[in-house]
Image 1: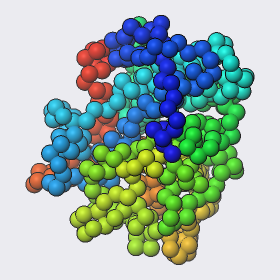
Image 2 (image 1 turned 90 degrees about the vertical axis):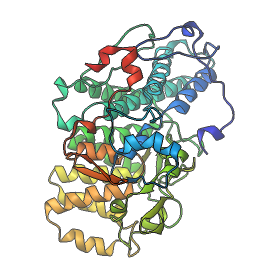
Image 3 (image 1 turned 45 degrees about the vertical axis):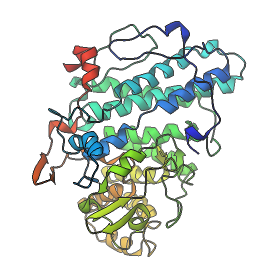
Length: 442
């Protein structure tokens, strides 16, 4: 059950700032109810959950997962072609926009909830603290996604000297903010995760409400953040903490691992591959080639009509809502362990996943992994990450932090190239945000 399937809830906002508009963030709060009670704040934070954008899915068009061809509708070409071919200088006027405003709207709500802890009524201490903990998680997650869309990858630059995105740590809608450096952004993210850990007290939510953050989600998100930072020891520790409590993998064929009701799901917030995305794309043939005939995901994730016509099963419906899950935790642990020279552990985390994903129970993979050199093992971990997490909004981020390889694609006889280390591995801050605050262009 996705957010649009739960009972209708009051979408409250803050009347005292209704008429305010932050020209920098392009936020205009809406609504007529000043929340005071716990149920009203629960409705407010539900609005934040509903507003979380699907930009990780839109970024997939820039990755090596997606093929666009001449069979697309004119409307879809207008929306996605220039994203797919990395044409950021002169995109079609109908090109889909990344949701800068939506991210900051979620941040506004999260900040208001955090600031209102002492003003909430008609609820228990646990209920109030859970709401505040969820707000800290939302704030961390929005800043993390913004940084990975619109700032250089942490491991490819000097974070302390690299401009990133503006941190928004209060609900003031009048102040004009400037871009913070990447180090400060990640420091804030980790601090918010620490705060969330102190507040969250719900172990798990019933299916249908599992879009909400729970206690286990802190280490799950921490595992990802620290992996992207190259903090291998800390990332592995966070991954292991999750896997100690939740380690069951979905069974293929059958329930897909990114389904909202999958046994793997830790948080089912985002429908990453929205229906309009899944309708528009075909699966890149070279990417599809990463899936061997013995790989159960080949048929579970994709529908191969012909050699050049491969459609996506793993998206396009609110069934497929997934933000954090067990499969990712195993892959995070494998990658972190490899970088710590704990190759036996890395191989075992990898094989734990592969035993559930191949029709021979992973026997052939066990033999192959046993014969791999250290560098070959890392390649296998990263390839397994591409396969397992395909079309879940990870691939573009992974390409950014792992070498930023050269990508090439052709459309109607024209060839387009994203060179290794290309500046276009960082998506520009949207034009409308820069027009509202020209300082963002610096």
